[in-house]
Image 1 (cartoon, rainbow over the protein chains, first blue to last red):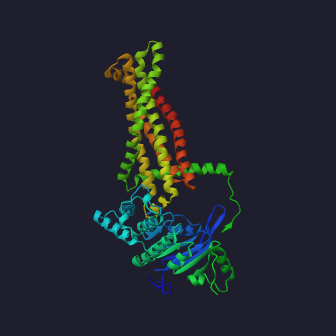
Image 2: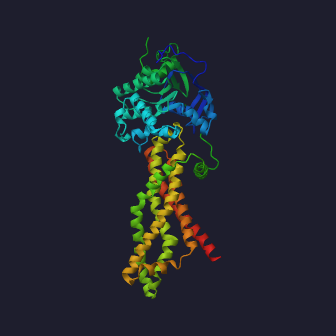
Image 3: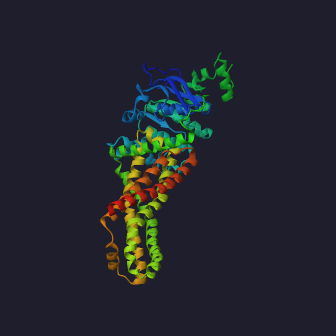
Length: 262
Length: 264
Protein backbone atom coordinates (compact mmCIF):
# COMPACT_ATOMS: atom_id res chain seq x y z
CA UNK A 1 0.00 0.00 0.00
CA UNK A 2 1.28 3.43 -0.80
CA UNK A 3 1.96 5.49 2.32
CA UNK A 4 -0.88 7.72 3.42
CA UNK A 5 0.89 10.88 2.38
CA UNK A 6 2.29 9.56 -0.90
CA UNK A 7 -0.81 8.86 -2.95
CA UNK A 8 0.10 9.55 -6.54
CA UNK A 9 -2.95 11.13 -8.04
CA UNK A 10 -3.85 10.14 -11.58
CA UNK A 11 -5.13 12.96 -13.69
CA UNK A 12 -8.64 11.53 -13.57
CA UNK A 13 -10.23 10.58 -10.26
CA UNK A 14 -11.58 7.01 -10.10
CA UNK A 15 -14.74 8.34 -8.43
CA UNK A 16 -15.86 11.92 -8.86
CA UNK A 17 -19.00 13.27 -7.16
CA UNK A 18 -20.35 16.69 -8.01
CA UNK A 19 -23.38 18.53 -6.62
CA UNK A 20 -25.03 15.41 -5.18
CA UNK A 21 -28.41 15.86 -3.52
CA UNK A 22 -30.67 13.18 -2.03
CA UNK A 23 -33.79 13.46 0.08
CA UNK A 24 -36.26 10.94 1.53
CA UNK A 25 -39.81 12.24 1.95
CA UNK A 26 -39.40 15.40 3.98
CA UNK A 27 -35.73 14.93 4.89
CA UNK A 28 -32.80 16.27 2.89
CA UNK A 29 -30.08 13.72 3.57
CA UNK A 30 -27.32 14.76 1.18
CA UNK A 31 -26.94 18.40 0.15
CA UNK A 32 -24.30 19.39 -2.37
CA UNK A 33 -21.80 16.58 -1.82
CA UNK A 34 -18.58 17.04 -3.80
CA UNK A 35 -15.56 14.75 -3.56
CA UNK A 36 -12.92 13.03 -5.69
CA UNK A 37 -11.28 9.69 -4.97
CA UNK A 38 -8.10 8.82 -6.81
CA UNK A 39 -6.60 5.45 -7.67
CA UNK A 40 -5.05 3.79 -4.63
CA UNK A 41 -6.81 6.08 -2.19
CA UNK A 42 -8.81 4.88 0.81
CA UNK A 43 -11.48 7.41 1.75
CA UNK A 44 -13.02 6.92 5.17
CA UNK A 45 -16.43 8.57 5.50
CA UNK A 46 -17.43 9.45 9.04
CA UNK A 47 -20.47 11.17 10.44
CA UNK A 48 -23.51 10.76 12.64
CA UNK A 49 -25.92 7.87 12.26
CA UNK A 50 -28.47 8.89 9.64
CA UNK A 51 -26.06 11.41 8.11
CA UNK A 52 -26.33 9.66 4.75
CA UNK A 53 -23.03 7.75 4.68
CA UNK A 54 -24.57 4.45 3.56
CA UNK A 55 -26.89 6.30 1.19
CA UNK A 56 -23.82 7.88 -0.41
CA UNK A 57 -22.15 4.56 -1.25
CA UNK A 58 -25.44 3.02 -2.37
CA UNK A 59 -25.83 5.96 -4.78
CA UNK A 60 -22.27 5.38 -6.03
CA UNK A 61 -23.09 1.78 -6.95
CA UNK A 62 -26.48 2.67 -8.42
CA UNK A 63 -28.70 1.04 -5.80
CA UNK A 64 -30.36 4.36 -4.95
CA UNK A 65 -30.94 7.07 -7.56
CA UNK A 66 -29.84 10.57 -6.57
CA UNK A 67 -32.16 13.59 -6.81
CA UNK A 68 -29.48 15.72 -8.46
CA UNK A 69 -25.79 15.61 -9.26
CA UNK A 70 -23.25 13.59 -11.18
CA UNK A 71 -21.36 10.53 -9.95
CA UNK A 72 -18.58 9.52 -12.28
CA UNK A 73 -17.17 6.07 -11.60
CA UNK A 74 -14.21 5.06 -13.79
CA UNK A 75 -15.12 7.98 -16.04
CA UNK A 76 -18.78 6.98 -16.54
CA UNK A 77 -21.71 8.87 -15.03
CA UNK A 78 -23.50 6.20 -13.04
CA UNK A 79 -26.71 8.25 -12.87
CA UNK A 80 -27.14 7.94 -16.65
CA UNK A 81 -26.50 4.19 -16.88
CA UNK A 82 -29.09 1.42 -16.92
CA UNK A 83 -29.24 -2.33 -17.40
CA UNK A 84 -26.17 -3.93 -18.93
CA UNK A 85 -24.16 -0.69 -19.00
CA UNK A 86 -24.71 -0.22 -15.27
CA UNK A 87 -23.86 -3.88 -14.62
CA UNK A 88 -20.62 -3.48 -16.59
CA UNK A 89 -19.52 -0.69 -14.22
CA UNK A 90 -20.73 -2.63 -11.17
CA UNK A 91 -18.39 -5.48 -12.08
CA UNK A 92 -15.52 -3.10 -11.24
CA UNK A 93 -16.96 -2.26 -7.82
CA UNK A 94 -17.08 -4.50 -4.76
CA UNK A 95 -19.61 -3.75 -2.04
CA UNK A 96 -19.22 -5.15 1.45
CA UNK A 97 -22.55 -4.86 3.28
CA UNK A 98 -22.87 -4.00 6.95
CA UNK A 99 -24.66 -7.30 7.66
CA UNK A 100 -22.50 -9.20 5.12
CA UNK A 101 -25.62 -10.12 3.07
CA UNK A 102 -24.48 -13.70 2.49
CA UNK A 103 -27.05 -15.89 0.73
CA UNK A 104 -28.51 -17.99 3.56
CA UNK A 105 -29.54 -20.88 1.34
CA UNK A 106 -26.04 -21.33 -0.11
CA UNK A 107 -22.82 -22.65 1.45
CA UNK A 108 -19.69 -20.48 1.55
CA UNK A 109 -18.48 -22.17 -1.65
CA UNK A 110 -21.80 -21.51 -3.44
CA UNK A 111 -21.86 -17.90 -2.17
CA UNK A 112 -18.46 -17.34 -3.75
CA UNK A 113 -19.17 -19.28 -6.94
CA UNK A 114 -22.52 -17.57 -7.58
CA UNK A 115 -21.23 -14.18 -8.90
CA UNK A 116 -18.66 -16.01 -11.04
CA UNK A 117 -21.17 -18.46 -12.52
CA UNK A 118 -23.57 -15.65 -13.35
CA UNK A 119 -21.02 -13.25 -14.83
CA UNK A 120 -18.25 -15.42 -16.28
CA UNK A 121 -20.11 -18.31 -17.85
CA UNK A 122 -17.14 -19.57 -19.83
CA UNK A 123 -15.09 -20.46 -16.75
CA UNK A 124 -14.49 -24.17 -16.20
CA UNK A 125 -15.13 -25.95 -12.89
CA UNK A 126 -11.36 -26.05 -12.21
CA UNK A 127 -11.00 -22.31 -12.87
CA UNK A 128 -13.92 -21.50 -10.58
CA UNK A 129 -12.46 -23.73 -7.83
CA UNK A 130 -9.10 -21.97 -8.18
CA UNK A 131 -10.71 -18.51 -7.92
CA UNK A 132 -12.70 -19.56 -4.84
CA UNK A 133 -9.59 -21.00 -3.18
CA UNK A 134 -7.64 -17.81 -3.94
CA UNK A 135 -10.14 -15.41 -2.33
CA UNK A 136 -10.66 -17.70 0.65
CA UNK A 137 -6.90 -17.75 1.11
CA UNK A 138 -6.86 -13.95 0.90
CA UNK A 139 -9.39 -13.64 3.74
CA UNK A 140 -7.84 -16.51 5.72
CA UNK A 141 -10.89 -18.78 5.79
CA UNK A 142 -9.95 -21.66 3.51
CA UNK A 143 -11.24 -24.24 5.98
CA UNK A 144 -14.78 -22.77 5.97
CA UNK A 145 -15.48 -23.56 2.32
CA UNK A 146 -18.35 -25.98 2.91
CA UNK A 147 -19.87 -24.25 5.93
CA UNK A 148 -23.31 -22.60 5.80
CA UNK A 149 -23.40 -18.84 6.59
CA UNK A 150 -25.53 -19.47 9.69
CA UNK A 151 -22.64 -21.41 11.22
CA UNK A 152 -20.11 -18.57 10.83
CA UNK A 153 -19.23 -15.95 13.46
CA UNK A 154 -19.81 -12.23 12.80
CA UNK A 155 -16.18 -11.64 11.84
CA UNK A 156 -16.09 -14.68 9.57
CA UNK A 157 -19.28 -13.54 7.84
CA UNK A 158 -17.67 -10.15 7.17
CA UNK A 159 -14.59 -11.86 5.73
CA UNK A 160 -16.65 -14.11 3.46
CA UNK A 161 -18.68 -11.06 2.39
CA UNK A 162 -15.43 -9.34 1.42
CA UNK A 163 -14.20 -12.52 -0.32
CA UNK A 164 -17.41 -12.63 -2.38
CA UNK A 165 -16.78 -9.11 -3.64
CA UNK A 166 -13.10 -9.85 -4.33
CA UNK A 167 -13.91 -12.80 -6.55
CA UNK A 168 -14.91 -10.44 -9.38
CA UNK A 169 -11.55 -8.61 -9.02
CA UNK A 170 -12.96 -5.10 -8.42
CA UNK A 171 -10.98 -1.89 -8.81
CA UNK A 172 -13.07 -0.10 -6.20
CA UNK A 173 -14.19 -1.43 -2.82
CA UNK A 174 -17.07 0.07 -0.85
CA UNK A 175 -17.24 -1.02 2.80
CA UNK A 176 -20.37 -0.25 4.80
CA UNK A 177 -19.36 -0.25 8.48
CA UNK A 178 -16.92 -3.16 8.21
CA UNK A 179 -16.18 -3.30 11.95
CA UNK A 180 -19.69 -2.62 13.29
CA UNK A 181 -20.69 -5.04 16.03
CA UNK A 182 -17.30 -6.74 16.22
CA UNK A 183 -14.96 -7.04 19.21
CA UNK A 184 -11.70 -5.01 19.12
CA UNK A 185 -9.53 -7.98 18.12
CA UNK A 186 -11.81 -9.03 15.24
CA UNK A 187 -12.18 -5.36 14.24
CA UNK A 188 -8.42 -5.10 14.03
CA UNK A 189 -8.29 -8.25 11.86
CA UNK A 190 -10.87 -6.71 9.50
CA UNK A 191 -8.85 -3.46 9.38
CA UNK A 192 -5.73 -5.42 8.46
CA UNK A 193 -7.75 -7.33 5.86
CA UNK A 194 -8.95 -4.06 4.26
CA UNK A 195 -5.33 -2.90 4.01
CA UNK A 196 -4.10 -6.23 2.65
CA UNK A 197 -6.92 -6.28 0.07
CA UNK A 198 -5.83 -2.86 -1.13
CA UNK A 199 -2.24 -4.00 -1.30
CA UNK A 200 -2.96 -7.30 -3.07
CA UNK A 201 -5.71 -6.20 -5.46
CA UNK A 202 -4.64 -2.55 -5.85
CA UNK A 203 -8.13 -1.24 -5.10
CA UNK A 204 -9.41 2.19 -4.16
CA UNK A 205 -11.87 2.13 -1.28
CA UNK A 206 -14.59 4.07 0.45
CA UNK A 207 -15.01 2.93 4.03
CA UNK A 208 -18.02 3.98 6.07
CA UNK A 209 -17.28 3.77 9.76
CA UNK A 210 -17.80 5.25 13.21
CA UNK A 211 -14.72 3.46 14.46
CA UNK A 212 -11.79 5.85 14.95
CA UNK A 213 -9.27 2.98 15.01
CA UNK A 214 -10.63 1.70 11.70
CA UNK A 215 -10.46 5.23 10.27
CA UNK A 216 -6.89 5.76 11.40
CA UNK A 217 -5.71 2.29 10.30
CA UNK A 218 -7.34 2.14 6.88
CA UNK A 219 -7.84 5.70 5.64
CA UNK A 220 -5.54 7.80 3.48
CA UNK A 221 -8.21 10.45 3.55
CA UNK A 222 -11.03 11.12 6.02
CA UNK A 223 -14.26 12.82 4.94
CA UNK A 224 -16.44 14.21 7.71
CA UNK A 225 -20.06 14.15 6.53
CA UNK A 226 -21.98 16.67 8.60
CA UNK A 227 -25.33 18.28 7.76
CA UNK A 228 -25.48 16.44 4.45
CA UNK A 229 -22.14 17.59 3.08
CA UNK A 230 -18.41 17.01 3.54
CA UNK A 231 -17.48 19.66 6.10
CA UNK A 232 -13.90 18.53 6.36
CA UNK A 233 -11.75 16.32 4.13
CA UNK A 234 -8.11 15.52 4.80
CA UNK A 235 -5.78 13.14 6.57
CA UNK A 236 -6.79 11.79 9.98
CA UNK A 237 -4.67 14.39 11.75
CA UNK A 238 -5.99 17.24 9.63
CA UNK A 239 -9.61 16.28 10.25
CA UNK A 240 -9.25 15.57 13.92
CA UNK A 241 -7.12 18.63 14.54
CA UNK A 242 -8.96 21.27 12.52
CA UNK A 243 -7.02 24.31 13.66
CA UNK A 244 -8.98 27.48 13.24
CA UNK A 245 -12.22 25.75 12.20
CA UNK A 246 -14.09 25.97 15.48
CA UNK A 247 -17.43 24.83 14.04
CA UNK A 248 -16.03 21.54 12.74
CA UNK A 249 -13.92 21.07 15.85
CA UNK A 250 -16.96 21.48 18.08
CA UNK A 251 -19.01 19.06 16.03
CA UNK A 252 -16.29 16.41 15.93
CA UNK A 253 -15.65 16.86 19.66
CA UNK A 254 -19.37 16.50 20.29
CA UNK A 255 -19.93 13.45 18.03
CA UNK A 256 -16.76 11.49 18.72
CA UNK A 257 -15.82 12.74 22.17
CA UNK A 258 -12.37 13.20 20.64
CA UNK A 259 -9.57 14.94 22.55
CA UNK A 260 -7.95 17.31 20.11
CA UNK A 261 -4.23 17.55 19.87
CA UNK A 262 -3.02 20.95 20.95
CA UNK B 1 -29.73 16.90 7.15
CA UNK B 2 -32.66 19.34 7.04
CA UNK B 3 -36.40 18.80 7.31
CA UNK B 4 -38.52 20.21 4.53
CA UNK B 5 -42.20 21.15 4.58
CA UNK B 6 -44.55 18.10 4.56
CA UNK B 7 -45.12 16.37 1.24
CA UNK B 8 -48.25 17.39 -0.64
CA UNK B 9 -50.74 14.71 -1.73
CA UNK B 10 -53.14 14.75 -4.69
CA UNK B 11 -56.15 13.63 -2.62
CA UNK B 12 -54.94 12.36 0.73
CA UNK B 13 -52.18 10.06 1.91
CA UNK B 14 -54.28 6.85 2.06
CA UNK B 15 -55.91 7.24 -1.37
CA UNK B 16 -52.65 8.35 -3.00
CA UNK B 17 -50.86 5.35 -1.50
CA UNK B 18 -53.63 2.99 -2.72
CA UNK B 19 -53.30 4.18 -6.32
CA UNK B 20 -49.51 4.14 -6.06
CA UNK B 21 -49.78 0.53 -4.85
CA UNK B 22 -51.96 -0.45 -7.82
CA UNK B 23 -49.54 1.28 -10.19
CA UNK B 24 -46.53 -0.45 -8.60
CA UNK B 25 -48.22 -3.88 -8.78
CA UNK B 26 -49.07 -3.31 -12.45
CA UNK B 27 -45.50 -2.20 -13.16
CA UNK B 28 -44.24 -5.35 -11.41
CA UNK B 29 -46.41 -7.57 -13.64
CA UNK B 30 -45.30 -5.65 -16.74
CA UNK B 31 -41.66 -6.07 -15.71
CA UNK B 32 -42.22 -9.81 -15.24
CA UNK B 33 -43.73 -10.12 -18.72
CA UNK B 34 -40.86 -8.24 -20.32
CA UNK B 35 -38.06 -9.97 -18.34
CA UNK B 36 -39.53 -13.48 -18.78
CA UNK B 37 -39.01 -13.46 -22.54
CA UNK B 38 -35.54 -11.91 -22.52
CA UNK B 39 -32.38 -14.04 -22.15
CA UNK B 40 -30.57 -15.20 -20.07
CA UNK B 41 -32.96 -17.95 -18.93
CA UNK B 42 -32.25 -19.58 -15.58
CA UNK B 43 -33.60 -23.07 -16.45
CA UNK B 44 -31.77 -24.77 -13.58
CA UNK B 45 -33.31 -22.38 -11.06
CA UNK B 46 -36.77 -22.86 -12.61
CA UNK B 47 -36.40 -26.64 -12.19
CA UNK B 48 -35.21 -26.12 -8.61
CA UNK B 49 -38.23 -23.93 -7.85
CA UNK B 50 -40.58 -26.47 -9.50
CA UNK B 51 -39.14 -29.01 -7.08
CA UNK B 52 -39.56 -26.65 -4.11
CA UNK B 53 -43.13 -25.79 -5.05
CA UNK B 54 -44.28 -29.08 -6.52
CA UNK B 55 -42.57 -32.02 -4.86
CA UNK B 56 -42.59 -30.43 -1.41
CA UNK B 57 -46.34 -29.75 -1.67
CA UNK B 58 -47.17 -33.33 -2.68
CA UNK B 59 -47.85 -34.81 0.79
CA UNK B 60 -50.30 -32.04 1.68
CA UNK B 61 -52.02 -32.15 -1.73
CA UNK B 62 -52.24 -35.94 -1.57
CA UNK B 63 -53.95 -35.94 1.80
CA UNK B 64 -56.23 -32.99 1.07
CA UNK B 65 -57.28 -34.22 -2.38
CA UNK B 66 -58.11 -37.73 -1.21
CA UNK B 67 -59.97 -36.59 1.91
CA UNK B 68 -61.89 -33.89 0.00
CA UNK B 69 -63.19 -36.40 -2.56
CA UNK B 70 -64.10 -38.95 0.08
CA UNK B 71 -65.77 -36.57 2.54
CA UNK B 72 -67.63 -34.67 -0.20
CA UNK B 73 -69.03 -37.96 -1.52
CA UNK B 74 -70.01 -39.19 1.94
CA UNK B 75 -71.83 -35.92 2.67
CA UNK B 76 -73.61 -35.83 -0.71
CA UNK B 77 -74.79 -39.46 -0.69
CA UNK B 78 -77.63 -39.26 1.87
CA UNK B 79 -79.41 -36.48 -0.04
CA UNK B 80 -79.16 -38.37 -3.34
CA UNK B 81 -80.27 -41.66 -1.73
CA UNK B 82 -83.34 -39.87 -0.36
CA UNK B 83 -84.40 -39.07 -3.94
CA UNK B 84 -83.37 -42.52 -5.19
CA UNK B 85 -80.56 -40.96 -7.19
CA UNK B 86 -77.52 -42.66 -5.65
CA UNK B 87 -76.45 -43.73 -9.15
CA UNK B 88 -75.85 -40.06 -9.99
CA UNK B 89 -73.11 -39.87 -7.37
CA UNK B 90 -70.15 -40.62 -9.75
CA UNK B 91 -71.20 -37.99 -12.31
CA UNK B 92 -72.07 -35.41 -9.63
CA UNK B 93 -68.72 -35.88 -7.92
CA UNK B 94 -66.75 -35.88 -11.18
CA UNK B 95 -68.38 -32.63 -12.27
CA UNK B 96 -67.72 -31.04 -8.87
CA UNK B 97 -64.09 -32.19 -8.74
CA UNK B 98 -63.10 -31.52 -12.35
CA UNK B 99 -64.93 -28.21 -12.71
CA UNK B 100 -64.21 -26.68 -9.32
CA UNK B 101 -62.83 -28.60 -6.37
CA UNK B 102 -59.54 -29.91 -7.80
CA UNK B 103 -58.17 -26.58 -8.97
CA UNK B 104 -59.70 -24.51 -6.16
CA UNK B 105 -58.52 -26.73 -3.30
CA UNK B 106 -55.01 -26.95 -4.80
CA UNK B 107 -54.86 -23.20 -5.32
CA UNK B 108 -55.96 -22.45 -1.76
CA UNK B 109 -53.43 -24.89 -0.31
CA UNK B 110 -50.65 -23.48 -2.49
CA UNK B 111 -51.65 -19.90 -1.64
CA UNK B 112 -51.04 -20.81 2.00
CA UNK B 113 -47.95 -22.95 1.58
CA UNK B 114 -46.20 -21.61 -1.52
CA UNK B 115 -47.38 -17.96 -1.36
CA UNK B 116 -46.29 -17.48 2.23
CA UNK B 117 -43.00 -19.28 1.62
CA UNK B 118 -42.12 -17.11 -1.40
CA UNK B 119 -43.22 -13.93 0.42
CA UNK B 120 -41.17 -14.76 3.53
CA UNK B 121 -38.09 -15.94 1.60
CA UNK B 122 -37.86 -12.93 -0.69
CA UNK B 123 -38.88 -10.60 2.15
CA UNK B 124 -36.07 -11.84 4.33
CA UNK B 125 -33.63 -11.58 1.41
CA UNK B 126 -34.74 -7.99 0.91
CA UNK B 127 -34.36 -6.87 4.52
CA UNK B 128 -30.98 -8.61 4.95
CA UNK B 129 -29.74 -6.90 1.75
CA UNK B 130 -29.22 -10.21 -0.10
CA UNK B 131 -31.23 -8.85 -3.05
CA UNK B 132 -29.04 -5.72 -3.09
CA UNK B 133 -25.98 -7.99 -2.92
CA UNK B 134 -27.13 -9.69 -6.13
CA UNK B 135 -27.70 -6.36 -7.81
CA UNK B 136 -24.24 -5.03 -6.94
CA UNK B 137 -22.71 -8.26 -8.30
CA UNK B 138 -24.29 -7.40 -11.69
CA UNK B 139 -26.90 -10.16 -11.29
CA UNK B 140 -30.48 -9.24 -12.11
CA UNK B 141 -32.35 -10.27 -8.92
CA UNK B 142 -35.75 -9.81 -10.56
CA UNK B 143 -34.89 -12.31 -13.24
CA UNK B 144 -33.19 -14.78 -10.93
CA UNK B 145 -35.65 -14.64 -8.04
CA UNK B 146 -38.99 -13.43 -9.38
CA UNK B 147 -39.18 -14.71 -12.96
CA UNK B 148 -38.06 -18.22 -11.98
CA UNK B 149 -40.52 -18.50 -9.10
CA UNK B 150 -43.50 -17.17 -11.05
CA UNK B 151 -42.78 -19.47 -14.01
CA UNK B 152 -42.32 -22.43 -11.65
CA UNK B 153 -45.60 -21.81 -9.83
CA UNK B 154 -47.44 -21.26 -13.14
CA UNK B 155 -46.16 -24.63 -14.40
CA UNK B 156 -46.39 -26.61 -11.18
CA UNK B 157 -49.75 -25.62 -9.75
CA UNK B 158 -51.78 -26.89 -12.78
CA UNK B 159 -49.92 -30.23 -12.50
CA UNK B 160 -50.68 -30.35 -8.78
CA UNK B 161 -54.33 -29.55 -9.60
CA UNK B 162 -54.54 -32.52 -11.98
CA UNK B 163 -52.96 -34.72 -9.33
CA UNK B 164 -55.34 -33.40 -6.66
CA UNK B 165 -58.37 -34.00 -8.94
CA UNK B 166 -57.23 -37.57 -9.61
CA UNK B 167 -56.83 -38.29 -5.88
CA UNK B 168 -60.17 -36.67 -5.07
CA UNK B 169 -61.80 -38.91 -7.69
CA UNK B 170 -60.07 -41.94 -6.11
CA UNK B 171 -61.33 -40.90 -2.68
CA UNK B 172 -64.78 -40.45 -4.10
CA UNK B 173 -64.62 -43.85 -5.83
CA UNK B 174 -63.61 -45.59 -2.58
CA UNK B 175 -66.53 -43.97 -0.80
CA UNK B 176 -68.97 -44.98 -3.58
CA UNK B 177 -67.43 -48.45 -3.79
CA UNK B 178 -67.85 -49.05 -0.05
CA UNK B 179 -71.60 -48.34 -0.29
CA UNK B 180 -72.69 -49.26 -3.82
CA UNK B 181 -70.00 -51.83 -4.72
CA UNK B 182 -69.33 -49.93 -7.97
CA UNK B 183 -66.34 -51.02 -10.05
CA UNK B 184 -63.56 -48.60 -11.04
CA UNK B 185 -64.61 -48.87 -14.67
CA UNK B 186 -68.27 -48.12 -14.07
CA UNK B 187 -67.45 -45.24 -11.71
CA UNK B 188 -65.15 -43.51 -14.17
CA UNK B 189 -67.26 -44.27 -17.27
CA UNK B 190 -70.32 -42.93 -15.51
CA UNK B 191 -68.45 -39.94 -14.09
CA UNK B 192 -66.66 -38.85 -17.25
CA UNK B 193 -69.74 -39.27 -19.47
CA UNK B 194 -70.86 -35.85 -18.21
CA UNK B 195 -67.49 -34.13 -18.60
CA UNK B 196 -66.75 -32.11 -21.75
CA UNK B 197 -63.54 -30.73 -23.19
CA UNK B 198 -64.66 -27.27 -22.04
CA UNK B 199 -64.77 -28.46 -18.40
CA UNK B 200 -61.20 -29.74 -18.54
CA UNK B 201 -59.97 -26.72 -20.51
CA UNK B 202 -61.62 -24.22 -18.14
CA UNK B 203 -60.25 -26.05 -15.11
CA UNK B 204 -56.74 -26.12 -16.55
CA UNK B 205 -56.95 -22.44 -17.49
CA UNK B 206 -58.06 -21.64 -13.95
CA UNK B 207 -55.10 -23.54 -12.50
CA UNK B 208 -52.65 -21.69 -14.73
CA UNK B 209 -54.16 -18.35 -13.70
CA UNK B 210 -54.12 -19.39 -10.02
CA UNK B 211 -50.48 -20.50 -10.30
CA UNK B 212 -49.45 -17.19 -11.85
CA UNK B 213 -51.44 -15.25 -9.23
CA UNK B 214 -49.86 -17.08 -6.29
CA UNK B 215 -46.34 -16.69 -7.70
CA UNK B 216 -46.59 -13.05 -8.70
CA UNK B 217 -48.30 -11.90 -5.47
CA UNK B 218 -45.83 -13.81 -3.26
CA UNK B 219 -42.91 -12.34 -5.21
CA UNK B 220 -44.35 -8.81 -5.27
CA UNK B 221 -44.91 -8.74 -1.53
CA UNK B 222 -41.55 -10.34 -0.71
CA UNK B 223 -39.50 -8.34 -3.22
CA UNK B 224 -40.92 -5.05 -1.91
CA UNK B 225 -40.78 -5.92 1.80
CA UNK B 226 -39.46 -3.27 4.16
CA UNK B 227 -39.21 -2.48 7.87
CA UNK B 228 -37.14 -5.42 9.03
CA UNK B 229 -38.52 -8.66 10.43
CA UNK B 230 -41.94 -7.06 10.86
CA UNK B 231 -41.97 -6.48 7.11
CA UNK B 232 -41.08 -10.12 6.42
CA UNK B 233 -44.05 -11.36 8.47
CA UNK B 234 -46.30 -8.81 6.82
CA UNK B 235 -45.12 -9.83 3.34
CA UNK B 236 -45.84 -13.51 4.02
CA UNK B 237 -49.24 -12.75 5.52
CA UNK B 238 -50.32 -10.37 2.76
CA UNK B 239 -49.12 -12.81 0.10
CA UNK B 240 -51.55 -15.43 1.45
CA UNK B 241 -54.51 -13.11 2.07
CA UNK B 242 -54.32 -11.29 -1.26
CA UNK B 243 -53.67 -14.53 -3.21
CA UNK B 244 -56.77 -16.19 -1.69
CA UNK B 245 -58.88 -13.11 -2.33
CA UNK B 246 -57.73 -12.98 -5.96
CA UNK B 247 -58.25 -16.76 -6.41
CA UNK B 248 -61.93 -16.45 -5.45
CA UNK B 249 -62.43 -13.48 -7.76
CA UNK B 250 -60.72 -15.30 -10.66
CA UNK B 251 -62.76 -18.45 -9.94
CA UNK B 252 -66.01 -16.52 -10.29
CA UNK B 253 -64.88 -14.77 -13.48
CA UNK B 254 -63.60 -17.93 -15.21
CA UNK B 255 -66.68 -19.99 -14.23
CA UNK B 256 -68.87 -17.21 -15.60
CA UNK B 257 -66.93 -17.12 -18.89
CA UNK B 258 -67.07 -20.96 -19.16
CA UNK B 259 -70.82 -20.90 -18.59
CA UNK B 260 -71.33 -18.26 -21.28
CA UNK B 261 -69.37 -20.42 -23.71
CA UNK B 262 -71.25 -23.54 -22.60
CA UNK B 263 -74.76 -22.15 -23.02
CA UNK B 264 -74.42 -19.79 -25.95
